[in-house]
Amino acid sequence: MGDRSPKSVQKQASQKQSKNDGANQKKNALIMAQQATKAKAAANKKK
Image 1 (cartoon, rainbow, N blue to C red):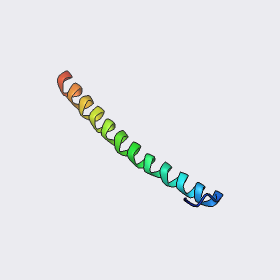
Image 2 (image 1 turned 60 degrees about the horizontal axis):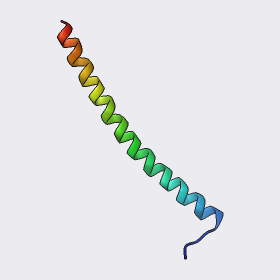
Image 3 (image 1 turned 180 degrees about the vertical axis):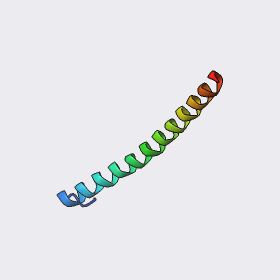
Image 4 (image 1 turned 120 degrees about the vertical axis):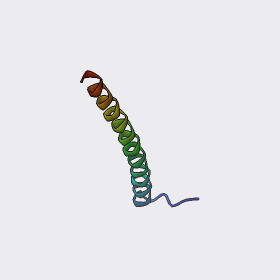
């Protein structure tokens, strides 16, 4: 079985958290890029 000391549990939790943060950052960057593209297209149509 794995090490269940508080320190190792904390370490695993923080690793899991940072992995999620990385995925969320990529997702948010993609959404922002898509929104920026749409905004540009809309601005160009108005001209």
